[in-house]
Image 1 (cartoon, rainbow, N blue to C red):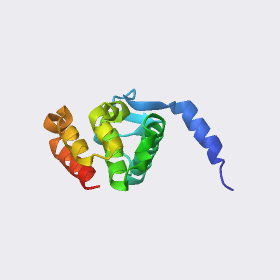
Image 2: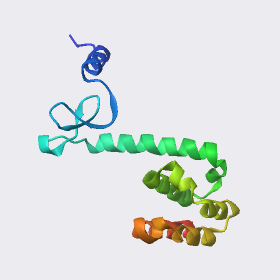
Image 3: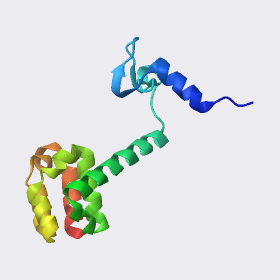
Length: 142
């Protein structure tokens, strides 16, 4: 006889609670979600499958935000769409949308201009210059 998994999940959530952000449990160990230990000091962590699931959810959220805010982004090549998602993954939707010149150039099809607008930023000059250069090159190459 098998147990009721849905009921078990409800019971565990009732005991553990849900926290969307990492927090320290009553013993001081880092935990997230519904009592999932992520503190390496206690052998915690997540599986690669769980990490990919989380990335997938975040990408879907980014796509939906772009669809609402800059719907023309879907007309870009696959490589350029991936660059925009990559940027938003790193700096958030708000951060990526601050690249107004880059977005203007992309929308107009001026990919060289978009590249140089990307490189003329704090992100490219001091935050993560290697990543910015790789992504800017992809924007230009398409």
